[in-house]
Length: 217
Image 1 (cartoon, helix red, strand yellow):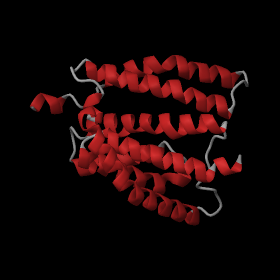
Image 2: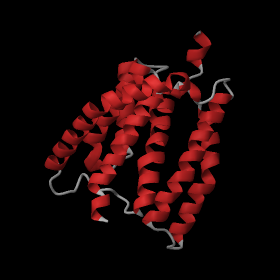
Image 3: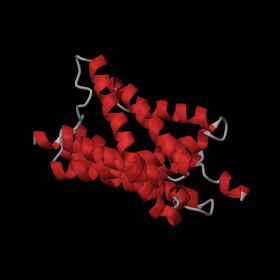
Image 4: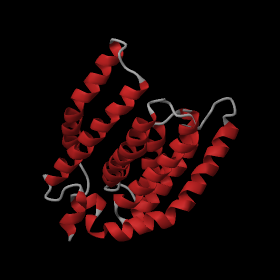
């Protein structure tokens, strides 16, 4: 159905609405930082409600177009998509580790694998391992990719989306994150659902945290 394709994207008005939903959480984080009351655990914890509100905002925005965020996740094919995620995960994670090694080699003076925040272990797993990657998939693969694809080819849209995904991460990780973003874009393009890219992203983050963070606790 043609209309079904036309409502996969969100508009500027939708993004402003989502920012309005997120504003109280962002404002709270700024206030805590201003008064020196913030910590890595608090900042990581605030990512949980921020993720929930952001995803809910996208759902409401798509709902106005008569579909909701289920359009991006294809809930009806969740089972097969989950199996697809498990099958493709080893290859994605292997490339991710390889790119991490190359990134560390190129920027030998920096720890390219370091996690910027050092929160409580449980908060790290829930926030950085579960909620953050799903929010990133909704923003980058769902919103940004689908919007750019209206004007450019899917292949070029993947490149632009991966660049955007990389630049919100530390500079030393750009090469690794760009390649990781391209792999997630390919998964989304192949299956047409955020279920696959989100599941793989979550699994990568959880293992990444367990390897480079939890043993140091």
